[in-house]
Each structure stands twice: as structure tokens, then as C-alpha cells.
Length: 223
Length: 223
DNA sequence: CTTTTTGAACTGACTGGTCAGTGCAAAATT
DNA sequence: AATTTTGCACTGACCAGTCAGTTCAAAAAG
Image (cartoon, rainbow over all chains, first blue to last red):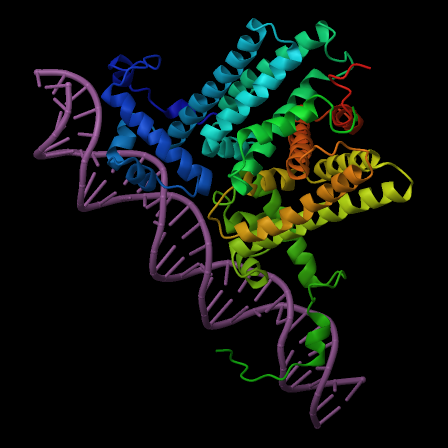
């Protein structure tokens, strides 16, 4: 199961200039970023296994040796890419929810704001989203546990707002928090991916209003 | 080429070889079925490229050569698997919609019946669903065009019912048919995959009622 | 001087696809 | 009825190519 046991943690990587938290533009971090960007599009298009390290290096404009200087392996590169990407999404969702709450909006407004935030994210990082969806429900993969953790962090943000909505009597107390959260995420995910894949010319607002309508029950419930 | 030279097509050859339409259980068709079943789980778990033809053959209990006797290539095997699977789903959705209509139900009832049909399908073929989701939005793949076609057939069933619902004034005429269909599909897809992956012990009815509630606007619309 | 990158050569395991040959049940022939 | 032929379905060893990962001397960057 755990294939990580044999991977030696390079001490040099830890003590060198760019710690994970640093947003600064160290040379090292800039290279990693380029590798992320190259990897994300290639893997989204072709899948992990079909994407070669040589391709990633070439598209990033660095030598193959540089890939292995920065990441222990192809798998580790991918794993850190997943963490990085989902981290961005989670932060974006949190911010949308918080901002909506600060502005005195209802919880439904907060959900709506999170839907928009999700759409903005997918609009900006369609490849990452695609790759995430392709990997999420797979089992027996090296990065499965990592993926589970970051997924839960993201979903928890939605669930929290749903819970608050129920407590505030804005939402029916008969809803199943977990399932409803999944359904909402799925709604956004699939609608957005279809949008980017098959109708990229449409506006984000179009997609958002369609989802908003569904969220607020203005599809079947005529009013 | 062949050692047999020019061979007249014998009547026997026609009888024994299983034409695509034949539902009968010829040897050939039985082997193909075994290969489908073996391939679907392996590819769902590992992805297309990470799955070897040797693995598929071994799990199906046949020799590697048999795979190539029955399918022109690994890609073709996968492509036909996709066609086969989505065909089943589409038929299932159609039947649910028709049955609901015959029973005098509203269009919303038909949508609800289709949601259930989708859940039943995913419950029965979780691996296929997983694999389908993982491939759907990829580009530049050999089977991309095939996938587009079968996807559209399936989505069209949902869109048709939505359109009828609007015409019958059961649904708001402001909804965007395509986007709403995508969102509904996504809702079912993701909720069901999460269900099978993370809470397989829950009942189908639980999941169905959660989605039903969302469809009918009984989440935010308090009543 | 230290850190990071380069780039090309190399290895060893693995993989998609091939092909000459086998087994066998139905059909043809005697 | 006994014998031979046919060709479908299947087999598995084999091949040519691919890829992750390694190595390292030297250069670039700071």
C-alpha cells in the first residue's frame, strides 16, 4: 500500500531557500511552478501514465534532470500538484463563503457565492479540474490517501455552510448534509466541465444563473 | 497471406460467427463479455494506459492472443466497451422516462424516475461509471469522437424530458435546457460515485431522496 | 563558494502487438 | 458409419520499442 517508505527525503530540499510557504519567486520555486503547469495540462489530456517525464520537462522548458532535482519521482510531482491545486480551490471557497457572510448575506447566498467561486476556479484551471475528477474515485493508487484528505477539506467547507443553513432554518432540516454537498459539488463540476469542453464561448454568468436556479428550486417549483 | 488461400464463405461460417446484433451466447460473444468485465474494473482502478493487455487477458482467463483475436487493439477494445456501457445507460434512462409517462406521471416525475434509473445503473456498474467520468472531458484521445456521440445520446434523453416539461408549463421556461441537463447529470453522477466510494453501506433510497429533494427545490425553498 | 540547472548517455524492466501453431466440432466425403 | 477436411477460436513465446529513473561532469546563477 504505502510505496513511500523507500523514498529518501532530501534534506537539501528542506533547508534550501524556498520553504513551501514562501510565496516569493525563488529560482527553485519558479521552476516547480513551471513543472506544475506543464504537468497539469499534459496529464489532463493524456492521463498520468500516458504522460512521460520527458514530455513534462520539454513543455516546461527544463532539462529532465531538473525534474528529478526538484521532485523525487513522477508520482511525487503529481501528488504535490494535487495538493497545491485543491489547496487553491479550498481557499477560494472559504473566502467566498466568508465574504458572503461578512456582507450580511444568507447561507443560501453563501452557497451561491461558493458556486460562483467554483466556476471561477474551473474557468481558470480547467485542466486541473479535469485531472482531479479523473483521479478522485480511483482506488489503489499511490496518491489516493493524499487525495482523500484534500477532498475532504474542500467538501467540508460546503458542508459547514449547509449545516449553518439548517441551524438558521434557512434550509430544510431534512436534508442530508453529506449527500447534498456531494450533489452540489457534482452539479457545479459537471456543468462547468461540459461548459468548458463543449460550449466555451458561453459566459460564466450564464452557467452561474442556471446553477443558481437549480439551487434555489426555481426549476420545477414555478413561481 | 493466409495459408488457406481463397476460401469460399461457407454457410457454417455465417452461423457460427456471432454477428454484432446476435444476443445469443456464442463462444465468441462470451469471450468478449469476459474481456469487457475484466477491462472495466482494471481500467477504472488504474486508468487506460496503466492497464496492460496482459492483465486484462489474465483476469478474463484467456490468452493474450485472444484479446487481439477479438479486438483490433487495446484502444478498440476500450472504445467498444464505452459504446456498450453508455448504450445500456441510455436504454435504461429512456425506459424510465417512458414508463413514467405511461403511468400518467408528470415530467418532474419522469425526471425523478430517471434520477433513480441513473442511480440503479451506477449501483450496478460503478466501475464503468468511474471510467466514463475519468475519460469524458479528455481531449485528443483516440476514442474521443465515439465518446462524444454516445454522451450526446444519453444527455439528449434528459434534455427531451426537460423540454417537454417546459412546454407543459411544469418547468420554468427560463431554464437553460443544456446546462440544466448537465447539472442534473452531474448531481447524480457525483453523488452516486461519492456514495459508492465513501458510504457504500447507505441505501439507494437515501441517495435518491436527497437528490429528489434538490430537484424539486425542497432544500432552500422551505415548505 | 554554494545552489541549481543542464544535457546526454545509459539501464533494465515492461508493453503493445505479432504470428506460427493447436484443438476441436461441424461439415464433407467415402 | 467411418474418415477426412475445414476453419473458427484460441494460444503463448517472442520482438521491437518505450519509459522511469540514474549518473555525472560541467556550466550557469546567485
